[in-house]
Image 1 (cartoon, each protein chain N blue to C red):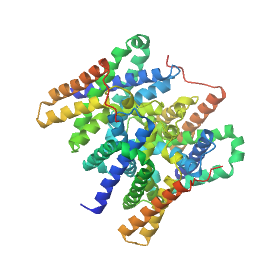
Image 2 (image 1 turned 45 degrees about the horizontal axis):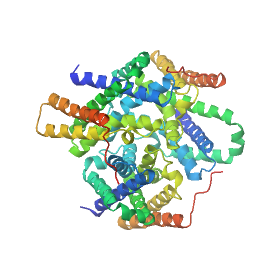
Image 3 (image 1 turned 120 degrees about the vertical axis):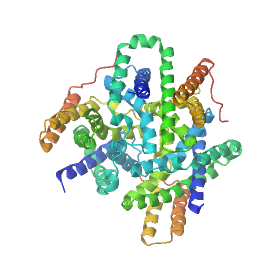
Image 4 (image 1 turned 90 degrees about the horizontal axis):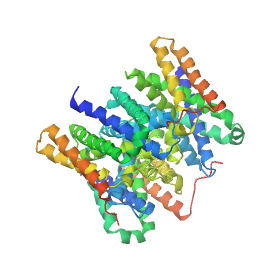
Length: 202
Length: 202
Length: 202
């Protein structure tokens, strides 16, 4: 069991928690099925879209049922620690940030392996990280997270770009994952703290 | 022409009717194109998503134009019997229930043929049945049917699970289709009658 | 560099502009990322959906980064000429009309090359033209353009049908593109001018 695999499973748990949290924010009335479905979509949506765009079959979670179990674990964690988790909402958003950092670098690398142009690889990395949340928000009739939050998808694009540069200079893979992932987390944390936002179009 | 094919065509007609009915509920102002498009999306959305996730090409309706004709037949039935159909709205929802029962068992079996884990096969069966309605509701800015209705997608999951168990015990295929499909219809009818709902997450 | 390629790139620029324009209509508050993302989705959404339904891999824009550059060019044009462009909103919608005309005929021909039935090819042509806008509208919680505008997707279906008839009679390809494309533009212009609409379903 490689370190990458462990991280992918952990990222899936984290995304399922973050999806279930978003479902709870939307409505207190959500039932078990609704919350599980939303956690599931958040966790697998971005990677599935990336793979369907690249034509990379079979999809990771369809080929390996452990990703489903990871989602169920995330939902159960969410359920049993909800009242304690709810108080630490701000701290918890760090989970989401770690999730998008991880999925961005994994997604960018996967796209590169398909031989696409680096610009496309960066977009695929960003898609892996944010499109699960976008699909979740669309299904629940919320303004998608990427139009709402401080510097969010842009942080992913920055991390993906750094990953591509270090990749070009043949930096060690694990080191590259750590540095590029940390850049995303760093930008997001600063963006939330200083309330950064992207310049208006007009 | 196999019995399965006849059922698939009938299921498509039923789903197109149920989609057009939902379009009418949403707005009395819908034009011919809008209603046809919504009926079309409802009928082919779930199966298309399942096949795109599995990488099962060509998609059924793209390979066989009869599914398009089935949709047009459904829309025309809807148009010419609208006033009479409208009075039997409640009875009509039984059509939708038969549609989801049929699509669940067909979808579950198709996923199994791709060699996926039974848990994934059950999800694919449920997707085949409900995601057409979910895409329809998203396009019309309605809360998706799976978050709205009494025990709906969960009934599909129950039927898919029964199908998988009987499949494991090598029960005759036609018999399995009938028993598992009837379970879905049975749960849905009881859920509507007794106003069952899934337990709240909190 | 074939004439078709030049037209595809121009169509992508036009669609990115029309997408960014729609983003601006929705909200004055859009940031650079939001507008670029919406322009991007509008430009590549329809063709991507068509290719994913047909199983035509690799997707055009993933294989050729020039389409990304075309989108960036469209966004920049939009930015620097916004105040002048805004006054000519009505004239500008002609760009969108040229875009859907072009994408319809290109999409219909591409689907035909996959050996699908002409009815399916017409639907794929229409999807290429309008689904980018539909996805954009869904993400921004707007009623999809095809349910909103005067004769829009229907004009694409008419143009695709004419293309298929002329194709059957082996009319010269370029001539067919021009005639079928002009039919779409012609119908759209008349529909806007005379406020045509599709008959109500009831």
